[in-house]
Each structure stands twice: as structure tokens, then as C-alpha cells.
Length: 460
Image (cartoon, rainbow, N blue to C red; front, top):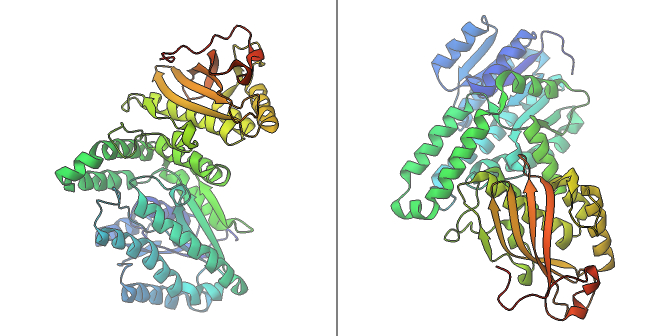
């Protein structure tokens, strides 16, 4: 798409946040800018800020007659030239536990984020066909990695991404491109609205709902506010969206922000168990045993005999929570899921020190070692019995089964793994203490002739 002046753009939700910056930047580039606003004050604000180059109209996107009136007015003013660019930006956020949220609140989110967006696109298609224009749908990475207590937002954006894929195919013959811009956290005016919505939901919970979800939701709210407040600045976010709007050839979907890029890559590459762990890590959730969110998904993903029944970690210590989840996910990938090299690359620093004479230092060496173990013994598993995080250290009481034998009666090698973690939650060093469990001939005693037998009282 050319960057020459005189092109036209229509932007929903242009009265504030990302939409406002998009309108001002596109006007500065010479676009003729139309948009919707929520209130007359926003219309006046953009008129003054743009020197009259941005033309907004107050429009309720959930009312088809209002959308058609706005699109008709814009299309009439453009005439045979048609509309070059439509940016579907307007959206609302309805956070909260799905059990707690009224269905009408969820319907309202879909009315705005899905049905309102569809209404706008369809209303502008005749003008877009004339110009062989482009639609940019503002989405979010939570459509690909949905977060707890953020279900309606992720679900509504995911629905629009499905519609976007279908539109892209159906409109190809008319020369209309359809781009999904998956946004990360942005400092675009949204955080204040998010904080208000979070406070409202928390305040409306009944005592019973507070008992069930209060602590976890408060943790989520604090984390989400922090994430949004430290996100991409408004000018940079708008510039990135405009870059996608003008990119040739048009991308089908692209991230807006480094965090969005990371999450979209995770959605492509990680297993369901890993994504379950990631979504809890992202919002700081690892609840106590009294909560439905008691054990980390990496532990839940283990086979029945390998379940981490006890997780000891202070749920208010977010560093400890993160480190526990990272170590559990490392075990799950490295041994149970046969993704040793991927897991060690993700959760260990390259110069990782093993402190074990049988395995060379370095994350690559450990990854190759366990990849070889799984190749030789596909049934090898790690059982995590108990895990504790204290400061920079993680202590894991584990049992390795079928590590060096395929005997179905193998009772394994028990031990305590000790990890030293860095500020990013990656392991720097590792020490282990091992004990044979059960029959020594099945426990591969040649691993270390001085490994003691498991005492009757267990290890902890």
C-alpha cells in the first residue's frame, strides 16, 4: 500500500487510546481520517488536535442502524474513490471468573468486539471494493494464549480472528486484504479502564465468590495492571499498526509489541501443558491447596504415577512461583514429553553448570544427554513428589523411572535436585543427591557405585 497523501481511512474507537494515536498519525501522513467516538468531547478533542483533519462521529457500534449511517456518510463523501483502509480498533474488556460474570456482561463484550466489528466491516465493503482496500483488525495475543479471568476478551478476539481468516478468503477475489494485528500490552489509555473494570468486578463479588476466587483474582488484577502499565507506548503501538496497514504484501497476522511476538511464538511451539503453565505464570497465579488452581499444570500433565502431589511455595512470592513452574515445566519437557533440547534451551542458561561428573556442563549438553536417554528408553519418566522454592533456589524431590532400563518393574532412582535460578527464572547451576529405590539391579547402580539406598523414612 502506498504512503502517498490523499488516501482514506476509517477507524473505530478513534476517540481515545490506540485509536486516537492512529487517527493523529495517519492524518499527519496525509490520510483523510474518519472515525467513531463515544462522546462529543472526543469528537471536539480530535478536531482540535488534528487541525480539523480527523472527522469523528459519535456511534454505538452495537446498533446496526448507527453503523450504517456512519459508513453511509463516509462512503458518500468518498464517492467513486472508495475507502482505502478500515481499522477495526474498538473493543471492550470484561474481566472476571467465568462463573461469576453475568451472561449479559459476556454478551455485551461479544456485541461490541464481534458483532459490532462484523457490522462495521460489512457496512464498508462496498467502499473497500471500489478502492481494493484493506481491513486491519486489532486483536490481541490472548486470542492465542487466553488468560484466566480474561475469558470473554480472549474468546471474542479469537472469534474475530476466525472471521478474519474467512473474510480473507472470501474477499481475495475483490483485491481486499485482511490483516490481523495481534497487540501486546500497551500504554494507550487502556490501563485506566482495565483497572476500573477489575475493581468493579471485585467489588461486585458475593462473599461466597470472594472466598472462591478473591485471592486469585486480586493477584491477577495486580499483575494485569502492572503488565499494561509497562507495555508499549501509544506512539510506538500506533506506528507499528500503521506499518502493518501499509506493508506490501499484506501480512495475514503480525504482532504489535515484543510480548505479543513471544506469545504468538509460544502458541505455535508449546504443548497444551506448557501453555497451561505459561498462562498461570503470566498472571502470577499459583494458588494454595485450598484453591481450584492448586497445582501447576506442568505437574498436572504428568502421568498418574508421576503427579506432583505436594507443591510447597509461598503463593505471594512471585519469583518463587515462577521458579517452581519453570522447573516443573523443564522436567515435563526434558523427560516426560521427549523435548529435552527444547526444554533445556528454554529454561537453562547456555553456561549452565551441572555439578555432575557424568554429564558435561552447559544447557546443550544436558539437552543432548536426555534426548539420548529418551531415544534409548522411551518409557523414561520423572516423578516429582515435592518441590520447594526459597530465594534463588528450587529443591525438587524426584524419582527417575526407566532412566537406564526398560524393565516395567524398575523402581527408579530417587533424589533431591537443587537448582540455582537467575532473575529471569532460568537455571544457572544444579546439584543432586541420589538414592537407589527398590531393587538395585533395576535402579542402574552403575550410574554411581556410591549412591546410597533409599531409607525407610523417605527423603524428606
